[in-house]
Image (cartoon, rainbow, N blue to C red):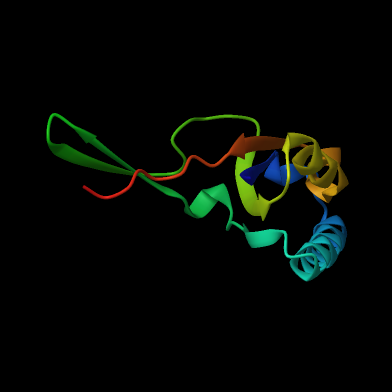
Length: 116
């Protein structure tokens, strides 16, 4: 089963040294998961300060700077893993450094329907 682990946190809580340590530990976990054939994809995101949001309302495009909603925690990255079950996804999520300062949301990926 494929799961997306969405990394949320307050960007301002990380010192530069903590951010580097977080990235190194996260990359080591990615290497381990890749070696086990469980990593599909993972990537950090640039700061929410450079985000752009697009909405279409009544056929009209609205493009704004910033994220969709003002929140304390911002989406900072993701992992997509292919594991046996939710318990295994939880075990991975709890090891991720951002879980110590923010939140790791786990969502199962829904398969796309067959083309018509």
